[in-house]
Image (cartoon, rainbow, N blue to C red; front, side, top):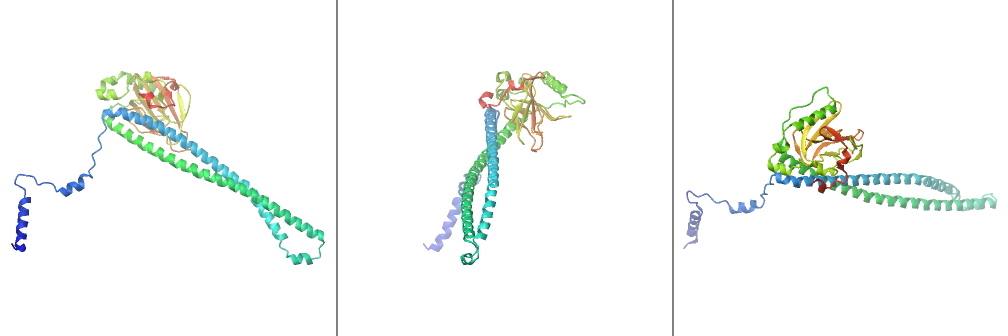
Length: 371
């Protein structure tokens, strides 16, 4: 058969074979499936209540590591400051040698600038010529000694420069690790809030003016005790995931709400670094988050069993009244300005009465102690 006649027949046969039967769906193009199927990422599963325990451990262990790295970073920066100070001192010590060396070079230049023929012909006694040669010899010896001293100083400065470079490299590595931990904590905190957001409890404003902070906190605590039991307003899965009871069994193991130098007992003061995050030491619900006249932002967290944590002195809160929290979750941030006083005020109250906060808190900060 002629090939020119065969081609149209083959084309028609192909169309008949690939024409879909009425009532059937047209199959997807295979090349499209192959090229796009491997690029489609599975959607990230939404966090559930069963993830709360894992997220709590992530927050607590991550915050512990964050504080450790922050301490290391501070120590490294102090070392860098000390190295810079030593370099400055070394440069200052080098300056007198440089000046003396320059002076002797100048004098030697003047002494040795007379041509030998002129020295021989000049009407001067031999003693004068001898003295001139002695002076020149002394100047050369002094210049050599200054060169040795300057070389020792320069070697010391070079060694300090190498140490500084290595220390600064360690600082950058530590800072990178710190930023990675902070990103991990941000992600974990966001997931916690996604899980617990539907459980936010609407509370009526309780601020009345004029009122002292003590009376306000006492009345706030009394209102919390009068409300329905936490176990009655929580679903079973959330109740199992949240540590809203039995806080007394964890006395002495709760982490400090912020990294810093604590001072005081019943009313604790923690001096912090700029931008230091503040965390809740235990699971609970925010009874109050907002300003209080004369005291700035105020945060009160109810932990169940009539226990509350009171926080003051931070720059701004990041949780609202009625929100549920898990231990280690960030709730506020200290001031960023290094010139401002950054002292976090902490109280642990039982039925509205302050207890000795150090009896409840620890700086060891291990997640096992909060389980």
